[in-house]
Length: 428
Image (cartoon, rainbow, N blue to C red; front, side, top):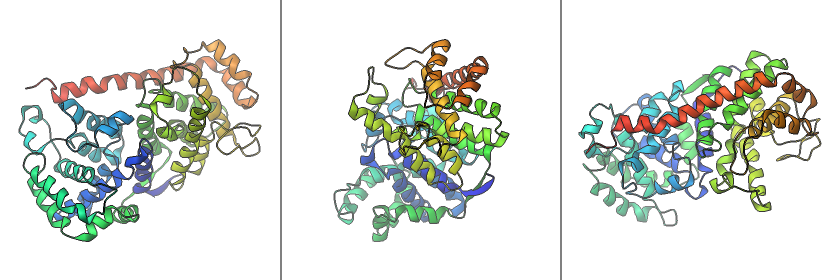
């Protein structure tokens, strides 16, 4: 699958996935990315310099992965405590930092709610706060002030006044001056509230392409997995368990090294559509009712549509999105049968069930390995050869699954102790 892919295709797909958490505030990332771009251009930065700022704008709230946290940051002066204001930026940095093309964007996101007046505070003396973090903060707060139910030009005076009131306190003064110059032009307001916004961003980013092979794809798939799974303690390690189980099975069933890596990526992203499912359903301690189960069924559909927007990922898309399809055609979302489900899709279906059964869930304890295998073997709509391969290698694959999940679990537990230490939350 080695090919050059516009990085904007991957990032907009992830940005759109994050919007699934709360559709009422969708396109926030795209608006912030465009506002940031316009301010930075007005300040005289080059297109190459601004690239990382636009990427940061498109993903800046990826650390606000649950609905309560995501909703709270949509208040202009949110965060009564330092922790509330900065924790999601730190988590965003943690989620993105390992992807080579996104390291600079991750640093911008890490500090994107630092007030201008705070940069001399002792808790930031050892931090190198990127200048673009201040621009991103300003753009984010500008967008928060926009009322989607009112005509945009009628809001310009109020928004500009609120931003001026924060000059030298919340916001970098040079960035505020640049914003006021841009804000005087009606097209700016029409752009950020129009249906053409995504097209504008794609045009801005069109010169920037990234070479993707099966190894590098895992970096972006890992971002998707962190965004998905960090929403709930019950799912924090699910995708990595599915990915490692599926890639191990694929290798044993004759897949090439490249296709086994693609299977790993598919496993990491198979639940991307679950961002549209409320945490109340994901963490429900009992069985789902008919309404809740209907909602749950939509997650594979959204996984398919999100990955379908990225060129060149057809194989990964199908493997990821078909994990609840069944050989007899009674699965979802497409009702595919054995004639339409290739071996990769069948592997992922078995891997998903195997991993889920061996995990703690709100409504049951983790099943023993013996009971897990017995249950899977009894499911006639799962592929026989894949089940047989799992049976023959169960101890090895279970060790691979468990080890990978323990590593991710430890990593998750380290986020906030590191945050506390770096930012000195208890400093005066």
